[in-house]
Length: 486
Image (cartoon, rainbow, N blue to C red; front, side, top):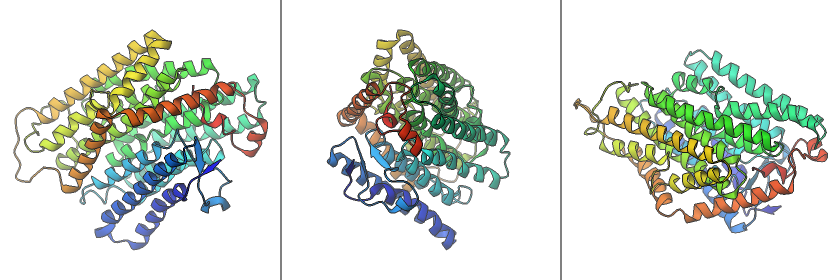
């Protein structure tokens, strides 16, 4: 396997983790937010350097030059490949802009230490192969939101039931898989358990109640950080697709497609802004799972491109709602608030990110959505129609929310509600990425298409259900099988 020129992967994982320890030891609330921003910026730069180094190496996968964590994890556990190369800087960007847009008055409610721990876990998850290490990281990533809910003295019953079931399905399913004979029908039951775990973490209907409960009870920033990186889709890619037969992939696609249409319709009728955002996220993220189950490189390219655009645009959309909520508290969509004149920049960003999430022309999601629809129509014409319907529902929901929040009778306040400098920087950064990726999409699409072709080739080279016995005995799937969607 090729090597990077610097231990980018492990450094990007360790920096936020050590930063959380630093914040805990300092206990200086006045500088805590500024220090967290510095740590998040450093982590983002490390992940960008990792992406640039990986591009220069010119291979499908690579690992660090030195391995600091080899005494904890087996060799080659943390690897960057064409599937995760863009997900790593994207996850670091999400955490940075969320922390950057946090008001100083709201910092005590939003745990910065838990945010840094979550960032370290997410980066480690995206860098990890399908093994027990990935299982442990997926389970560990559910702990920070639970700790916040307990600290806020909110009921954790729904969250604990779903995440406990998620952990049990992962452990039992993967343990059963290692004990089963590869290439036989014996892997169908553990495969079904792993599939249920992936669908639960992705919020696929009817396993989505934990997500709406999290947005209702946790801080908005924590809910965004736990959902927008789309860790559930990554779990499906690593754990389910290498062993899933065609009929299982079709079942995932059907459930994801139904969730996309259902969640889009639910977003239309929500009166609470947070719940509207939650269903919008559920609808668009479900479309990614629909695309991942397509056989064609075109559909897979669309899904991988949409993965980046949905995570980025809906993070920006959530930041806008969070900034508004920080100024006027939680608000309803049943009435007109007339906030445009008081926050014109946030109004424009609200509309841009909302429309970018559904693939509006000239935004980063436009080409990805077109490729997804084209790939779906080639395989199942009805699927393409349903994707269009789900997207239309989400577009109408975004416009309705915009009119409710920013139009109507103006209510002047004595305190300025315009965006702060840090918020403006986060808004401008995401705006440049959303519009730049839409106006010049070729580099990103070419990279995703190359990854899709390679992943499809590897999928065809390894028959579904063929998990080598020697790989299972070591606790991880072979490199070819671990990176194979269809």
